[in-house]
Structure formats: structure tokens, C-alpha cells
Image 1 (cartoon, rainbow, N blue to C red):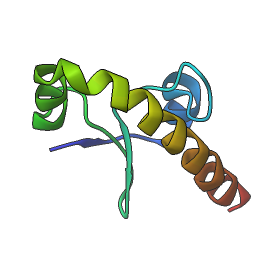
Image 2 (tube, rainbow, N blue to C red):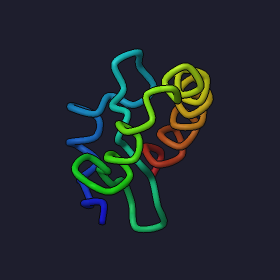
Image 3 (cartoon, helix red, strand yellow):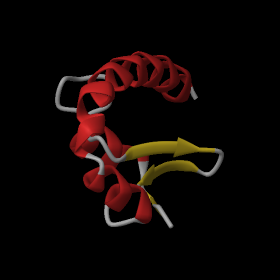
Image 4 (cartoon, helix red, strand yellow):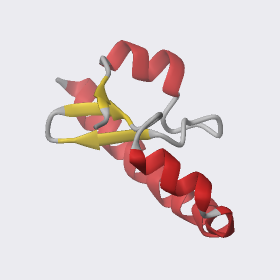
Length: 75
């Protein structure tokens, strides 16, 4: 199960919206979550052929995270 992480940690370490954004950063109705060390991470590592698709998905997610961060940081 992903671990909830505070917004300050997300901004400092996970760096959403940047080229260095963490691949395991997830957002749910509970807030930001880290999927590192979960079944999600294990299945991703087992499917190396997904890396090419992951690059495209990451671009889409970065754009979505930028919008989410703008909304969250306004509050």
C-alpha cells in the first residue's frame, strides 16, 4: 500500500513538474502517495519493455501534475 507523504516533501524531494520528477509519486483523494516499495513498483520493474511507453506517460503525468500543483498551492 502506498505511503502518504507531506506536500513539503513532495516539492523538495519528488520534484513534480520537473525532468527529475519521481516515477513513484502518486496522487489520490487522500493526498500524495509514494509507490516505492509497493507491488506497483515491483510490477513496473518486471516489465522493462514498458520503459518506452513510460516516457510518454511521464510527459502526460508531468503536465497533469503541474495543473494539480497549481490548484493545491492556491489553497
